[in-house]
Image (cartoon, rainbow, N blue to C red; front, top):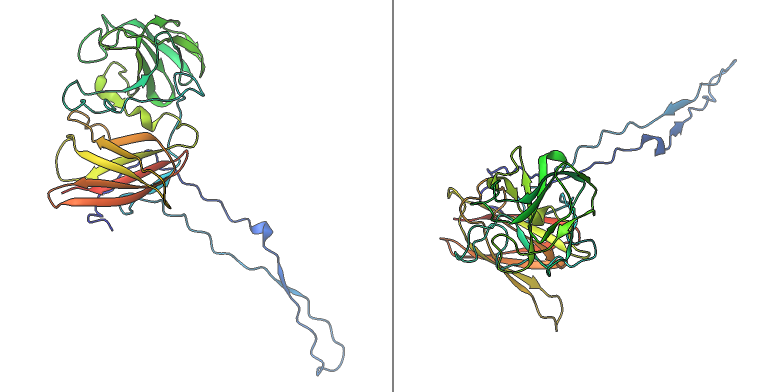
Length: 318
């Protein structure tokens, strides 16, 4: 049970539905009152009384609240496809994941690095309008200019933007409309990049150049077939975010299996606009154990991952 149930977490990804009761499928119950044989004289049969049961309206199910439960499994809002093309492996660099600093060696990461080779085609992750296509030597998208090199930014519905950085080629122009899967560029290593890869971001808000408006792309990208995603939020009295280590261990049923262990780090300072503290996609379905420590000691919590779903977790940290 949770130690603190006062916190109310507003979950963007929590979707629920309630199917109404179909009253037409409920059979009518007919009750016939027969004539009384003891009554003499002319008798008019009592008309049949038809009784139709009245069903009380079904109450709206209470959505699962991860602040009150060990975890909740929801549909998530996975609306963007792999920018390297459907069917391509989504290989996200774990040493420099979203919100991390690579153990203090780099600037806080505002997107994810998707491993690929030079000149690999890059596609629009969703339909929208190209609002920027060119080098960021004049328009600043990060801590300084020409950080991402050749950049394409696409505006989508609901105030969302996707950013594609370090491109070797740009194959669209600003103002163009693109559909999901349209070719927009090629993988490169322009800007601040130590090797060829695609830097991919999701931003939300009125100013797509604001680096503080980024969201974790792993919460928006469609999971690979047969894989799921986890989002962890910390319930703590500390103000602001800071790196905290977590260990996520796959629990293998039976014998002979080798469990996978993932080492996660919560977001660094400067990601206070993000509701969650760490997220990860590409997890095989099954049970996992989260291990973390605080001023009280070591804590364990078992969760479950489902294919194509998002597991929401709130951890109490003292």
